[in-house]
Image: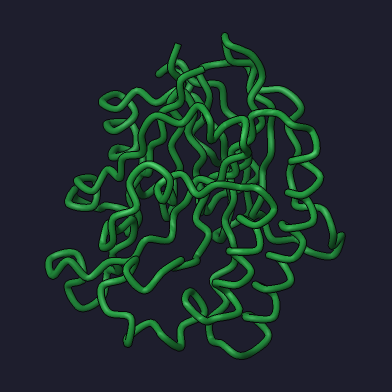
Length: 262
């Protein structure tokens, strides 16, 4: 059987709900990791999504951040918050075990900090958060199970993953320390899914609302699926669903969908 999993920063679940429901009906992914739902758990439109056959888990926050997992399979062992800093109250991480027909798959929905302006306190928070993610991922890899860390990483991995490297050179998304932290995750043994099966430059998952970025094709690729060896070995394809960006009231991000042969 195949299993499809998408990551999508929806930039407010309530503002984008018609678009999200349309896409869920059309693409029919098995699992979806959402970011920036921008609502407390009680405000999430659970019934509308459950009506499409999904189980729902959320880790929300009023007006900001927030992550969710939608799954056609049972969701177990659901764990909110990234370990390593009990004082961090930002809702940026939700981990769960999905009981798929072929066996359990561990996934996480991740909304990594933006980090701008850099340098500064927000950039320090970004790098500290990535260090915590590195430590946690190391422990998860030791379990030797299919693992998919999906989300908006707010990292442009390569110059070819943005429309103009000079524009982004000093941005927190492309600074050398940011890229080094992202590469350190891969050096643990994680594989970046798009890079494995496609790898072309200038395939974007985010187009800003400013300056006609969508119309001009001025995008960046910052939404990623990082895979354990047990998941990477089963990866068949990755597709960036660009057309959602052209819809009315669209999110500035688009879904990234991976298909696995399980």
